[in-house]
Length: 171
Image (cartoon, rainbow, N blue to C red; front, side, top):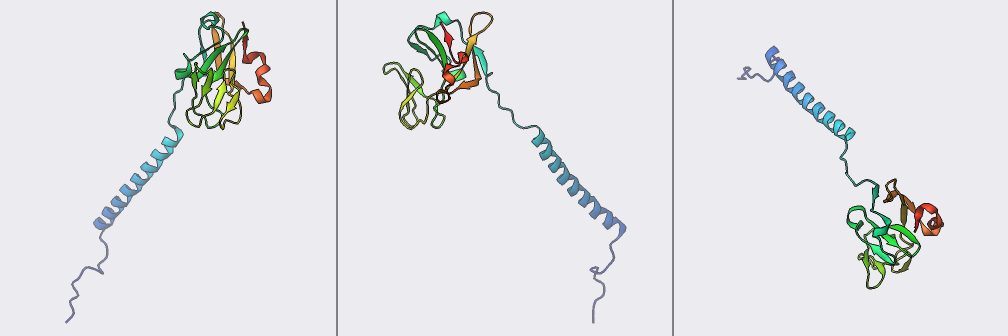
């Protein structure tokens, strides 16, 4: 004898249909909420706060001739170099892979700790894998007489930019 009392073929009741539709709508709303959250996150990316590209570096008299100032290397990644007749700012970024070189006053050179590139006080490369000299940045005088360094404008020696009047300041 066959038992015909199983509910596998029974039609879905109205209450059962509404409960399944509720579950479906909850999952749909959760998926759409996640999607919209990701879209909103895309519209508001992470912000990297960096120091401004231009800054005042004190008065020219603070820098002695024939010396390199490392005061701005940590915060702005710039060295201030004063010769007998010029002041210029060198970007402290090796032209090989972008490491930050160190100024070695006993050897009168910049030395990159990553791969050993060496640069003279002028920024000219003379040893190691660096393909070109260090870049200089715009230097000028602010209205109050202080040095104004602008890292957004760089000057490359191989392009002849070092002769640009904005790449140095006559003393």
